[in-house]
Length: 79
Figure 1 (spheres, helix red, strand yellow):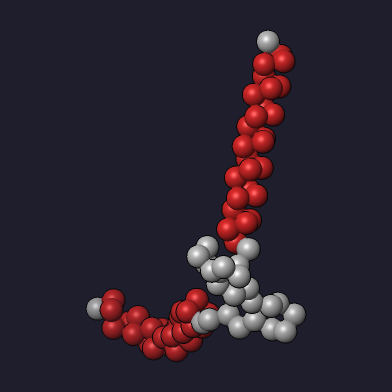
Figure 2: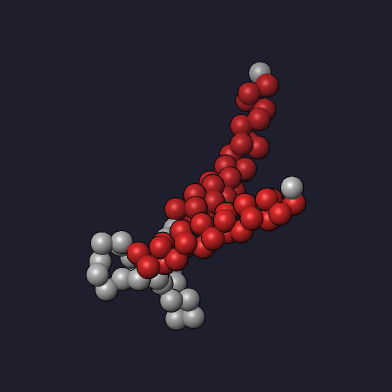
């Protein structure tokens, strides 16, 4: 049968395939370590009083509102 003829090739190819799959799966699941050149940002919460995240959010919302107001003024000026 054809299957019996393919067995030696499968036996030879199996270890290489297992090693490649192990490297691929291991690389995808490995956690990334950060070196001394890449500092890790700590998790920031809006509710922390010592955190500036809330200020950054307010600044971004103000910036978007000012941008929308400017866009509206420009559109009115073009009419």
